[in-house]
Length: 164
Ligand SMILES: [Fe+2]
Image (tube, rainbow, N blue to C red; front, top):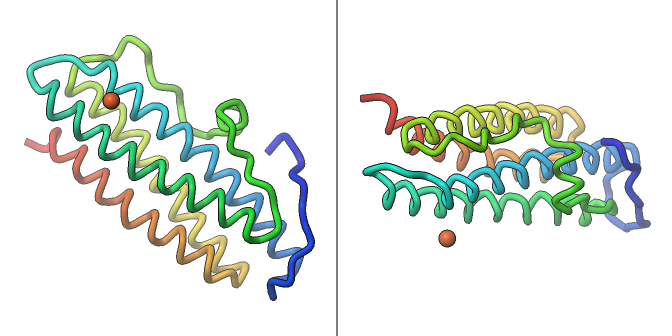
């Protein structure tokens, strides 16, 4: 995280140290989440091939779900007295995901590229569950657990196209 976020007083019974660490973790995941969302929409718009329509619709379903995660993650950061770092520029600056290759449009290739990014996001989300659990912030750990379960399903939906 390049930018230092503003913090606020709150009556919540988690220590400032824990909250600061969790807000940082949440904003890191928010950056990846927004980046992933934009890459899925990019794929929704640009995919080509005989499977166009079903991939176009699948990608929109995935994007909608990932956008919900962004909202949950951002609002957890603010609930903990932090600020959400949620603009496109903030996400671009802080995301750990590789960029979507602009010329990849063939259905199966797009699914493979998105699977790589969904898997990377799933991995960082699982690490975030552990980090929140270690910090004894079970609310944040539970939030990331919910995201993780969804991401595992999204990866399955993508990879099923590549497994036969
Ligand atoms: Fe659309």
